[in-house]
Length: 448
Length: 138
Image 1 (cartoon, chains in turn yellow, blue):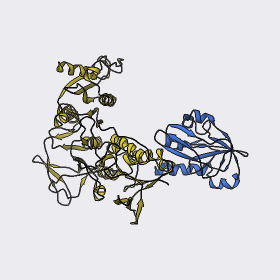
Image 2 (cartoon, chains in turn brown, purple):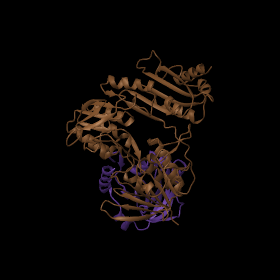
Image 3 (cartoon, chains in turn green, cyan):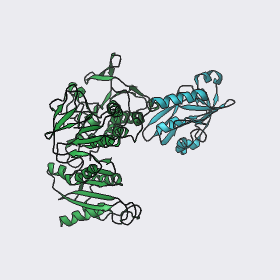
């Protein structure tokens, strides 16, 4: 009998799941359901359209219609999944015209993503608070910029907040970022590392208020100012980048259990507590490789890896998700920053005792023209001496060091092993001593 | 040869909406996939093709192509009996990415109903328009 596979959500996780399912089952009937007009586009690219490096939102579409046609994936866009019945194994959908249909499935993949949220702040119901989750959000911000906006307040100094902030500055706007925590990029970096990024952003003219919460949205018909740390900040654009929350309503209504992070609980095959129902991407939780605790990293790389696993299983084959290190990188003006595994802060929160080593070096031989600074911070668990985290900030060459440290962590590499690593060298490309190796040596000295 | 966006569309071929092209030489018809198809699939690692003597039918699958991320049926652009199969694309599937229109031909068929079936295909001008529409709706 032909297997029927339904995937709810058609972006990173959903399209990946559908493609993986097709690879395992050439005859299955695979249906992708998305509320959005566009499917298979890169959310991560949105801030760079606002900044102007990418010409149009249209360019973010990774999978053209031909892709869906060639893989025989039945894409239903502008269609909303309104209910899942796990007993009958059906999904109820409503299309743009309002027509309701009940679709049966043998395997179901929930990839409903996450939505940005605004904490309960006075005045949050007022119109004029924008966010950046989808193409349509991006178009709204872009329209404000084109209409002559001169200033913006970004609420939240995480990856998205800062990337949007930089994008708006590149368009000539005056940008203020308000962050409640005492540092920027609190998920990504430790405070000592985040400070370097903050200094760079401030040099470029971004105003950053840390340890200041948004207390109130002010304005008559729409938001025209915020109160933050007792100061009234007026602006033309207000972007909510407080964070995102897993979209779990469909799952909850269907009785599919959530986990301790309030995202959908999954096993190592990305299957929920209900058989033949999988959950992937920003709406699902999975274990962190180091802490073994569930987490919802809400990163594109996690979404595609989970999607592939769930799709393979939904297609009748077998695959396991190996866990999350939450490796992430960003570029803000001329500085790149990234992390893999635990920061020192996250280690402490999980009661893991660590020793750290931090080395400042250059991206080329010190004497070579154009060498840029780079700083590595290595986080090592005290007892096993295993590397559990790494942060890198530099003018270039950050990403592949993050990946390298991610590989090391996944293989359980110790600081002693990293200190003996065989690395490459040529003056126009790097320093004689790789700074990751030196950081490991520093850790060993502290462990003596 | 024209380029529609990033996709090459050579003259002198007929095209199907299943991303195939044919080149007619009398009764002999070369069949392959378009540049748009190979770019959508990306690096092709496996080509599963039928053997000589197999009968293919317009609009029906006769083989599959597989890349790292995707898998797609090959849908026959015209009906006929296979007279030749390109061994090179089976041993070196990357040929399909490098040269989809010449070295990357897939099969040669002896067409059985060419005249009538051509009506279901696009000539060069129509194919250019169709590729433009595809690039637009990307």
